[in-house]
Length: 264
Image 1 (cartoon, rainbow, N blue to C red):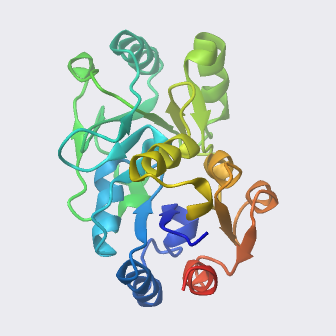
Image 2 (image 1 turned 30 degrees about the vertical axis):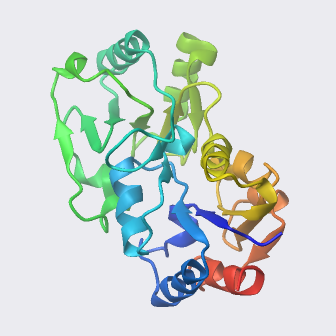
């Protein structure tokens, strides 16, 4: 069947290494949308950043963000949302603060952290109007409707943090996208495949009408969910193993080439 929904990861997939969308990709996606194809973002990033890049593509579709934990727009009820229980949010943030870990978390369009540290948010440098709300030690006021935490450590790496979290919280928390210096933490049962399926269901689409593209470990479930899966040449080996098609790298307009070949 014809592709009617395209869900694109951002970092390493849609975005170049300097965190931009090329004119070539914009043009190809505009052609796809002119034919009635819905284009959206499927990212581990927060809602504000996902919507920013969707708008650069002139897409008004609900975005899939926080590794599938939230599917929706800036306003109105979400298509899908999975939040941590506020008591667990308070417990986890207290755990992180007691260890002097740098943690940030999301609520709607906002991002919260003890304070803003520019070096921890290099990936957001091309997201306009990006602001971190520094809450100091007043973090317990911000624990409702949290879909994701992110732990960050640039010097010694994040692996010891992950081990400590797993020892303390077990399967209450699910680490995803361990970059070595940061790790996303989501509720159980949340991944990008869940978010894509929720949006496809809301649109009345079957998975053979969906194309997904990603490059990293937090894309694995999405790539193997049954949709037509595309991975750029720069993707992780595990992502490539799950791909229906391997395209050129994110710095060589790989997504544009794949969409031109299979959608246009």
